Length: 202
Image (cartoon, rainbow, N blue to C red; front, top):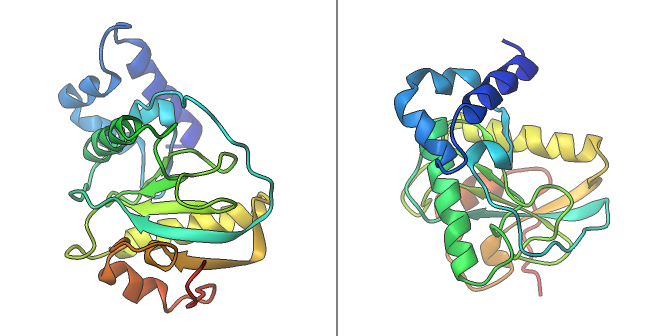
């Protein structure tokens, strides 16, 4: 099934719900929804039920910094589970007075990439950067090959779109502030990558 057809079917499901319904409620009665988005698909904000940001600060491209974080939540392995978690994270960040979900992108255990602020809006982690967060608590959880592949595909796309410089650097969240994010189990993987920068950022 092509991506275009998959999203057309997805939108048909959403338009079938009333304006007062939570769009994610349709997933509870449609087990086949997961089949619409194969691994490594890009899940747009309207698909996971995201709200509009209260404010947007535009980024100037191309950027040279990617920050890897984790959500410190439970893991998720289906479109339904991941969508509900991402929506809950956005609501939590709104309660913290952030203008939107804090990350540019999130990656679920289903191997899909969830749109946060996207390529063009500044995140709440660090100025002039792209923040990508793995969904889960990687003090204890472990990345799957599917999740790592999804991130690599996202970064390749970022370079191709002119959003990232070809020589961009990757750092972990705990290299920017005092935090346990993204967890040792993510750090152990990321530190082996070609673009990884081991230095702490000021």
